Image (cartoon, rainbow, N blue to C red):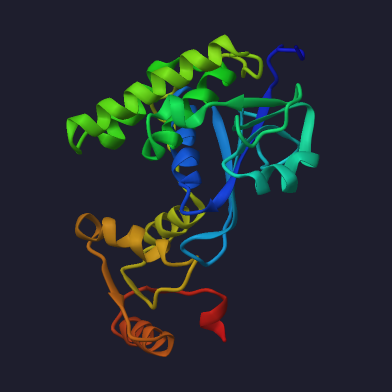
Length: 273
């Protein structure tokens, strides 16, 4: 077995097709890490399609000195075979591949997981991946339970119970097959620590700077800026308007600014064209 001494940072890369739920795994893991006291830097790569293609969700986790994403991959979660062939060369010196037992290569660098058996169905494979990662990183499953309860608690109780069952099965399986071999050093949970993405930070910064009006036409990846402002509109006295096209959004912002409202237009590459 490879050296299991803790490292100051860990890079987890989750890869698969659009529609496989890799963003769900990444977001749940990110919340578990933050609640456990770690800093994280997340990057995503995705294609503009509903199904297929190749997408990745990268999570760098560590202590207060963590300032950058990426680096050699310590744990590669391969939700399909293509992910293995595309990213195996990026593994660190003790890198590990998590792959389905039917697809993963039979060598020391791959942990071949009975995903469907542990999940009890395709719907809970993402939760299995979360349980595996928590065990390998040396994070107590109680943190993951808290995140799942907050994420699924408003849904039917049976959905939450099935997720908790899949989490527990995966956690125990991983402990028996090398759990803790990629563990992070202990961290102290911080009640004041928040998790937000770049677009949420842009929205918060705009509101803090006095913005009171936002006009937009939906354009990936800028749309979450106005969506964040919509969520705080009532509390902060904001007006957010979806226009019929980019030119209309700009005209609305110009008009609002003439009326004295600091304004923002959210757009992206196609919008500038």
